[in-house]
Structures are given as structure tokens and as C-alpha cells.
Length: 246
Image 1 (cartoon, rainbow, N blue to C red):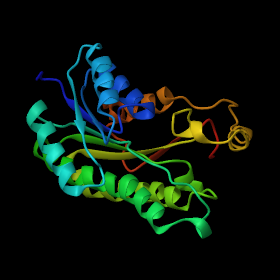
Image 2 (cartoon, rainbow, N blue to C red):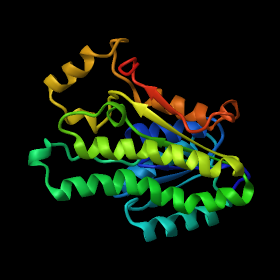
Image 3 (cartoon, helix red, strand yellow):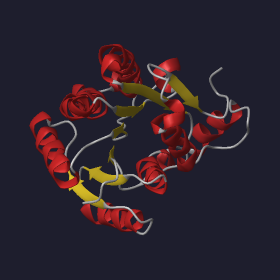
Image 4 (tube, rainbow, N blue to C red):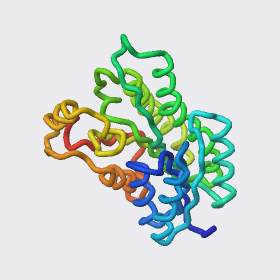
């Protein structure tokens, strides 16, 4: 493929992930569109990315599967000739109060959201280290900072991502690889569309800017943290939430 630098975006077939893929493409990066199940949606995203003048390819991968992630990263590296950016965006919810939460629902969220982040960092960073450059941005959440009733599993996974980000920022700084996290607030996506009107109203009441976030708001922040303008920023958590968390 081309000599452009390549970005991996997980969960990139829709919502925030797709917006990130498109924004990075506008900045000139080739895009590896990674998603677990919906290959048709992934191919749609690939076509939209290619329309922006860069290369793109879809990869079906369960981010919670360590071996599968390793094989996927190896294939991406072979297809594009390098990896410069990793955006850990893939995530699921299995909400419920702790007393009613099943072990399966706790484990599945931790496996996808937190272990999936670990899996991709583990396999992608050796490639970045060889070139002594890279950007890793992981999507956390405001509930990973503040917690949220009914989301013990999700909050724990997103808080864990912050811990991983800060630790890796220290470990990889000497190799010129930065690690940062973004903590979105309420963003209008298919994932948040399932919330009740009462839940949405409660969220809206605590947003000082009095509007819901859009996927593009998160994508713009990711693009900044991957740019040369952010080369001296690492180990940080950027809240993109309309002022919910101050």
C-alpha cells in the first residue's frame, strides 16, 4: 500500500469508532478498520475512508481473543508496512445493578473493554518500538472517573483503561510512543440510543453546555492527540463531556 502512516481503529464500523476512522483519514492516515462481527458495516466504513483518498482495509477480530488479536495485528503490519497509531475504541455494555449482575456480564465487559485494550497494545507496540514512534489513544469514559450506578462492570473496565494508559505512558516514553485516554461523556451513538428517556434527561441535566456530544467531538480529540501538536502530551486523560466532569 502507500507510504502513508497507518492507524488501527477498533470498533470502527459505526458510532465513535467510525467517526475516528474518518477523521484520521482526513488527516492522511491509512486506516485498518477492526470490528468483531458486522463485516458489511466495516466494508461500508472502508469505502467511506477510501473516498477520502487514503487506503483502508477491514479486519474481523474479537478484541478479547489474545491470539486472534496477535494474528490481526501481524496481518495489518504486513498489509500496510507499519503501524503508527492505535485507537482502542471497541467496547460493550452489560448494565445492571451489582446485586443483579451476573458473573458472565461482568467478565464479558472486562474482557472486551479492558483486556481488548491490553491485547492490542501488547501486539502493536513492538512494531512501533522498531521505528521508535507511535501514538496510542484509548477510549475510556466519564464513568471510569466518577463511577455510575448500574455500571459496575463498565466503570471498572474504563477506570482500568486509565490505569493502563498511565502505566504504559511511563514504560514507553523512552521509545517516543505516547499514551493518552479520552473520557467521553454522553455521546449520541447506537450504544446510548438504548437508554431510557429518563436516563437521557438525567444526563442532560448535568451537562453545562446543554447538548449531547457527537461522535465527531471524540474523533477531533483523538486526531489532536495523534498529531505532531500533541507530541509532548502523554499519560493524560482528556474529558470530552460538555463540562460534566470538572
